[in-house]
Image 1 (cartoon, rainbow, N blue to C red):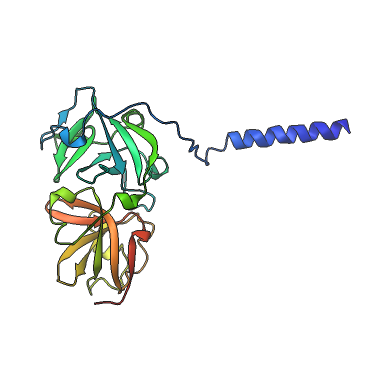
Image 2: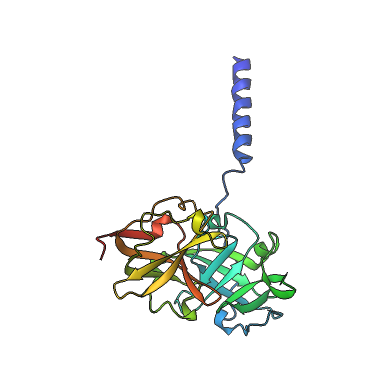
Length: 268
C-alpha cells in the first residue's frame, strides 16, 4: 500500500512539472501596465526624415492588424479608439497575435524610439540603414517588450472598423486603419485563381484587383506566406475587411485572415 501511494505521489509531481514546463502553451494571464498616455500619437512631430524621440512621453492605441494568417510579417498596425489616426510599429518577432490581438489597447513608450513618415504614414521603431540611408527599422525582440506595453483592455473590433468605399481609400489618412468595403468583388481576370499565384509574384506576394459597381478598383495583396494563399478566389461579391497600406504610390488592401473575406452575394 505504501509503495502504491508513493508511486501516485510521484506521478502527480511529474504531471505538475510537465504542465509547468509546457512552453507550447502561452501564459495569457494579463497583468495590466501602470503607464498612462501623456500625448496623442498624432502629436508626434514626425516628418519624412527619421528622428529620435527624446522626451519621456507615452501614447496609447489599439491593435488592428494580425499576423495569425501569415499575411502580415513582423509589423503591427495601430489606430486610436476614435479612428482618427493610425500608424505602424515594425517588430522583430513572430506570432505577435498571441499577445497583441486585434482590439487590444497598447501603451507605447516613445523615449529613445525613432519615427518617420514613410509611404504616407507614421512608423515608430528602431533605426536601420537601407541603401545607405537611415530608416525606421524593427524593434528588437528585447526592445519591443519595453516599448509596447500590453494592456488588459480589449475592445470588440467592430468599434474600430470603418466602413468606406474604394474611392475613399485613395488617400493617406486611411493607411494602417481597419477598414471594410462593401459591394465589391474580384475582377474577372482574378476569379478562379489562387490568392497567391507564384506565376504573378511581385516582391513576395500577389496583387489582384477588387472592384465596385462603379468600376473603382484597389489592389488586394496576398503574401506568399499567407496560410490561405492556395485557396481559390471566389466569383461572388460582398464585403472585405482589412488594413490599408501603401507601396510607393499604390494603395493596397491587406486582409488578416481569410475570415476577413465575406463574398457571399451574387456577382454584379
